[in-house]
Length: 85
Image (cartoon, rainbow, N blue to C red; front, side, top):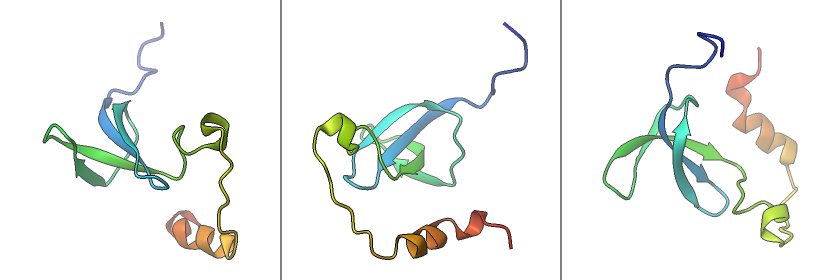
């Protein structure tokens, strides 16, 4: 295996599905500015997800209808800080 190809900052991170409030802890190097206190009382970095295996129609077998009004405006508001000016 090549040296220095893998990130060094792996740590436990909480991923939270914002559509159904499902959360899970796993090791990751995803960047996060938010933290959350987990069930064991320990504070972990928080990464918010728009969709996970608990809300995706392929895995749940249920089709969910999402409000489609203003999708472009919602996208622009959510990711405005990443867009170049």
